[in-house]
Length: 157
Image (cartoon, rainbow, N blue to C red; front, side):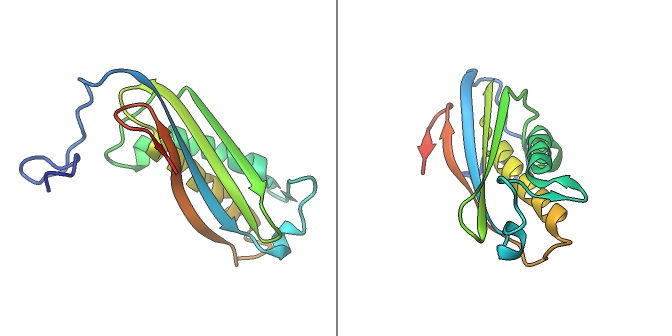
């Protein structure tokens, strides 16, 4: 159990103490692939779908940004962070799938991997919610961290 940073010496949960860490610029990029299917993608106009609920991608991007900002409210051991920037992109990658990319940047003492993953997730969930009247065959297929910089180690996949 000693390899887990969120477990104390009594094997109880704890929030990691970051007070001795240095403030550095930190970024994380997460990606999610989502199956929409031809029934939904065929209704797009200029890389956007308009439903009775509004513009799907624009609304989903706003939801993803909100998800980033609320990560510490839903993931118990995440620190509340002052987010410097969030950039979410949604691309149609073929006639069945889209890809959501969420990049989060801070200057702080802890990383933003969970924030980037939460932002990509919230974006996909919002797309699902806004398109479920058209089809419920959608699948959020893959969610992964693709890059992390700052702190002790950098990761690029």
